[in-house]
Image (cartoon, rainbow, N blue to C red; front, top):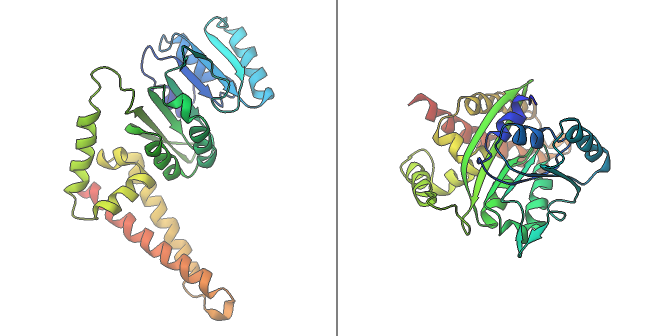
Length: 266
């Protein structure tokens, strides 16, 4: 099974030997890839819609993997079975959904998430909401990646359950590495760094990810265009409050983007 660059980026985050709950599995391609490449011994391919699920079943049968991939109709994690009070998957994978829907899955599945170890998420929008939700669920982001595919930017994040850590996992060292980096940056306050990490990804910033660099520059240029379009608006336009707030918001975002881009000049 060949995956798109986006789905391959997501699948590459899965720990070898992990049993995966692929929520929003669509055609089942990631599940098939994980089994074929010996990454996962078993995958629960789940979707809330029968249409995509039927296509996933067809693909699983076509590749002869029905014994390894359990295709289930499920709203979020609701259809994931438990054994002995613990979910039968240790990893949640959810890719290609909006940020708010991803947060809904996390919040509604919090009981099962507490018994899992890994979460791998690739929200299509509002990733800052997802990162905040992960913190609230007791997860710590350990890795992030980003690609540009067919003119669109995609970011993926991997987080570990701080209440159910794998043996020997260096969560403390990673947390200290993150804190050390942001504590020793004069460009922004600690609170501003946290906000920047939520919005753009702490590990992408720490590692000066080249695709993030391109994304930040694109955001800067797009905001410039918007600012040029609204700067001349006045009360005569009938939208003074709304325009003023948007103008202030954009100007603050521009200042943040410029300061973040200085990381790449060091």
